[in-house]
Image (cartoon, rainbow, N blue to C red; front, side, top):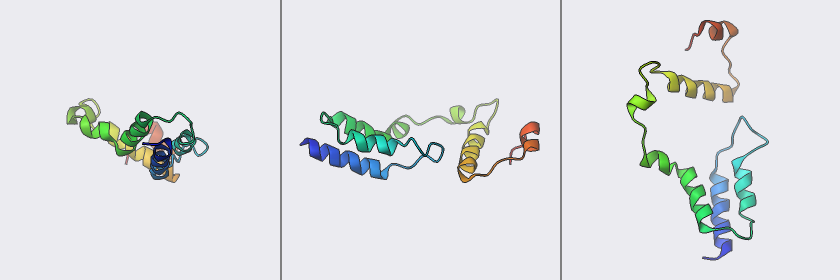
Length: 104
């Protein structure tokens, strides 16, 4: 396969890559677009980017319920994701909820 075909595939992957709301000046999408112009682009680089985009590792090695819900804090990762999503929307918890450890 020609290097231009690899570049085209990597540009397609870059176009499908989600934007990071927390780092608007540093996007992985931009890195992949510049990597597509590299003269020594390899098929392994394109394959690695596709694996990352498709979450193949997460599907191949799923996490157990025991890992996702540790006995000491069963809702830890749910709260972490909820905080991440709310933060991306600009929603913050009031200071008193942070102080007293109140989660909704």
